[in-house]
Length: 462
Ligand code: SF4
Image (spheres, helix red, strand yellow):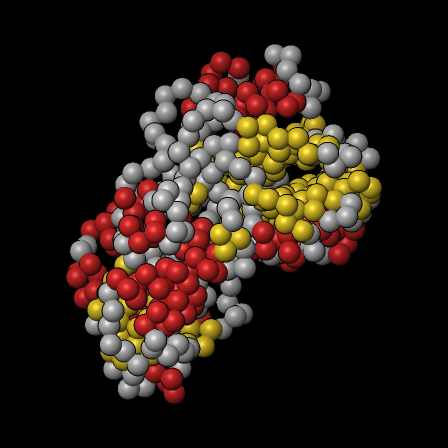
């Protein structure tokens, strides 16, 4: 089992009418790893928002006919979702749109607003607002409208709302006049901006900009609202309140695609550096360094480079089994590991192997993989994990909210080693995770490893 990211977002604004649907479609496909349960696109066309969304992968939700409906739209935003807050039903699929006499707009969101429940209570109790979804961003939409009813224009209303919401949010909003990107002041989730000759795009990850041949402009800064108008003029508003920087370190460890660059750091290079630090931290004699596909591979390369032990493959990955397939029972899930990863006997037989993976959540998948490698003849298996011990809940847009299910919360490293059946086991230390950027303060959230979060979770006001 892996910790899972909540969502990915993409938005485009063009100087002229464009095939916005196809542009967002490409941006979403390249961010499919950020959410596989639902996908959606909303576009502004002839003064109205048109939306298509559904459950499943991007390619299952959209075909050429549905994408053709967006032709001629100069603005569009899209979303891929893995549900953490709210159920995974169609009603919670994004973008969420509203057509109010004060404003017609659409919103797509990645993260988790930690005071959303308090905001919902307040809106329900004081204003009699009725919610249609259990989705965080419906509260944001209704707060914006509430601010506009008080006489504020859209941008002022959005600024006021941003000062009331706390937690992790990277958002793309689309009005008739603007494409807007918003990143929370801690900067938990990534958000960046790129351009082509006649369009500007915003995306969770830079790999999505590459997919539409956009040139990377820059990351949206923590606490920044970027407003792009129909003439492609860019305006930036900064949150002047002080806040610690806290990009989710799991973006580098596992969530993001290795060809993305987040806050100026290559995910690929960061993963390799994690492997290198693991090799320095706890060297071991071995014949072969292998990674668990896909997100353990770069760490294994870094470990191999540092240790000078050969790098090789230990498994064949069946690429036709997606991350999204849900197996109903634990037994079925364990069987599925074998369907997805088959050990390469010719490579591992009689070898002492260092096996690098990105995390251990419950330990069942890891135990299964090690047992498969032993059956294929591996002599020793030294497990190395590119994340520190994952002990605490995450409140910022992932699916881990109960620490009881985390193996590191109830077992020591030695107990985990025995449980998974490895000859040795080591996790990257928090200190080394913080060192890999080479900066004195990399501005990472390490809350699920240390129990110390960048923001106070007891937020009483909204
Ligand atoms: S608590 Fe962990 S998973 Fe959650 S944002 Fe922080 S580093 Fe990421």
